[in-house]
Image (tube, rainbow, N blue to C red):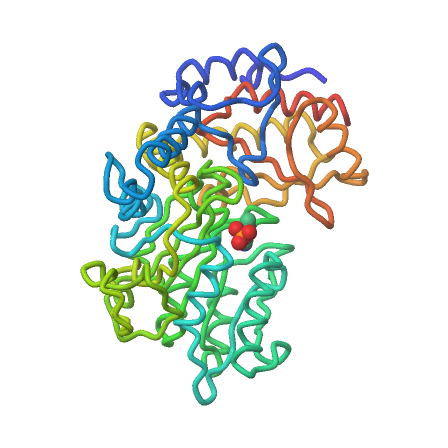
Length: 424
Ligand SMILES: *Cc1c(COP(=O)(O)O)cnc(C)c1O
């Protein structure tokens, strides 16, 4: 199929966009999989972000500390382990639109979700229910159900399942109306910032306002939102949020997760929580007193001393985001990159591919979720893999593909669509 020249959707045009891209040098800061002659087209940064080259040094540095200093590494060197989590708080807070004392890096995402529910799910009288979406990521759904069970509540009765209202998508009005409709029985809402299957960005601000108006606690899962879209958790007045750091944040497989607790709560030492010594007031932590006095910040929810080797990779990740100028420039590029992706798909593939992600800029991030019309999507996914194109397959019927502004190029996008067009 020929590409109409007037639409400027040629390979040359894509290369020109790369040449003019102020972030084009960032790609060189990452280890790209595949061999240099034949690099992979890596569109799964939404699943496992690529390794920044500096991560090697950051992790080695901590091994070196341990080798040379042993236990003294907790207090000595440029980045002592005792306050290590503090070195990432400010940059991480910027990425989610929070104040540094509202953010802590600790545990895994699902662990943090449980810790947050332990503090914030307070079923009272009629208000005993938690709203989640019908097709929530399974871990979130298991976490919510088991939390209800721990509170002696039947998950079948006490989960309110938010159904999509437009195909697989949610309109803001529908989500807000559903919250209002159930306000009398609803204690908490747990929703994603970006839905993992469709890639839709939910109207976090409006949804939070609708829930908070009725005194309903709002918890967001930002696994697919952080490092992808701009967030303003503090200003939106979200109660808590959790995210992982191995997707768009590139901190490595299973790396340490993030957690936001709005300062309204973070500074409240009276708030019940599952406590551990790392949440104890720093001045008295080592007095080993049995009275728990939490740090009056998000750090007051820490349980254990953190895994420093993984934290070093988070620190490297924050350095990379700082170099890129944080989310402003990245989002700007991302809108163009994914915009070109959608345009090329339409142009080259027309009806053969159905993009289920909404194309409104406010409702999409990096990812497009593709259904192969009238074909075997899974076979197409495997054929893409064979040809060195990394995407992922999500049951029942979607190929997720995410060009990431830190290391993907406009040319990658063009090549991806070209290979897909040849396959179909
Ligand atoms: C990736 C992802 C998780 C992962 O949970 P972990 O506790 O980090 O293993 C959870 N929820 C959503 C929505 C995700 O996309």
